Image (spheres, helix red, strand yellow):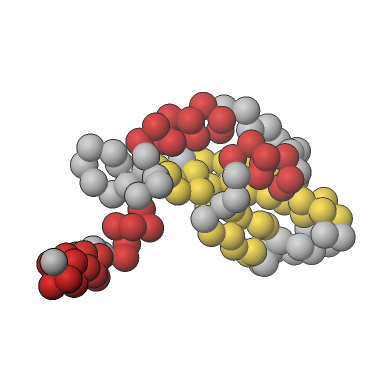
Length: 120
């Protein structure tokens, strides 16, 4: 009986080791989340603060800060871009990406300037 438990534990350990880490990381992303994200994105408005966007859509997957190459005193902060990714890369539930762009309003202040669903 002790040997059966040890073998069963070894098999479970082996099975867990064979599951790809990315499969575990992607498990919470369900197709329903894409629909909810699209419905929530309809509520985006120019001028929203990053806090308002985060309340609406959650934390972004990626962020980027781009310098304004044509800066002439209007926006020394450049552009802040948040990227949201929902869904998966399989055929039944394609991945959806939403990019939200913020413009600098002042020292450390940002406001939504625009957004897009690239690839749609």
